[in-house]
Image (cartoon, rainbow, N blue to C red; front, side, top):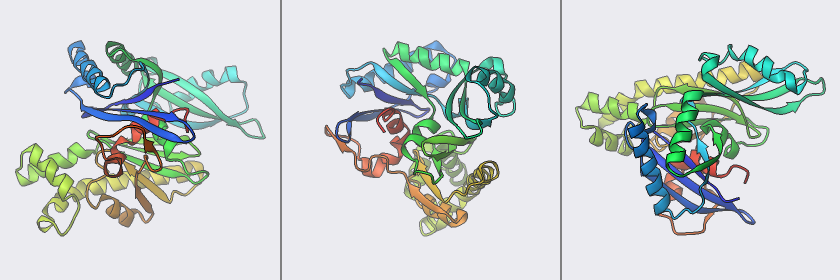
Length: 334
């Protein structure tokens, strides 16, 4: 069936549509500025503005289908792989609800828990992928989708969509998605999400630090972040010196995630893939490789994917920030 992926972020709304012929083909790709506070608000008036922005983007892209895979915000969702002792399938949900309190930081009556059995080992132990989303968030996103005339065929987290496209066989990979408000960390292997972590450091925090420290308007500060980033040889390293404390905090969170995976799953992570709007911050990739001592790559989700129609977006230079919506659009196709 025809469908598209839609990622409703805090700063932008992104849409992608893919088709599978002999290989993957990109039908549509675009974005629109997200109204503020938009979908994060509890006001229906703000939701209407978000729905209007979605309609405008779908019209501009000439997308005819109403079916969509809708992305949920990572900071409202907990996803995890858990082993359970041998049990029947009808016993799993009860076991999940008992276990959930250990890793879900919300009252259980406020979350919607879903799960999928990944495998059973020779001893009958069950590996289960657990997803718990705030009910209020799910309700809100479904309401905005209805306002925009969209029929969701699935709701996914960024972690799931990124694991789909950035899994490298039996070798675990850590995916860093640098968003505007926060960054998310996902460990994936063979398409499965092993653990996730959300960090309250994103592109906006970098921009705000530059603005306050150098006395610049936010728009100018953002252009400084994009142009100079962590470069030592630009502006006498002034922007770099402002950003380094935040960078070190982010790097520490990455190290904690690598350590957590090693402790729980007894595996080593030797690859970090960086995506999201902040991924292209100059020298970010190089600095991460230096402090982590592992391979670090800028995400290139569109590699090998041909566009069926002319695009207004250069996917070679800007592809990393469309990683989540690419993963949403690739559901069932890869």
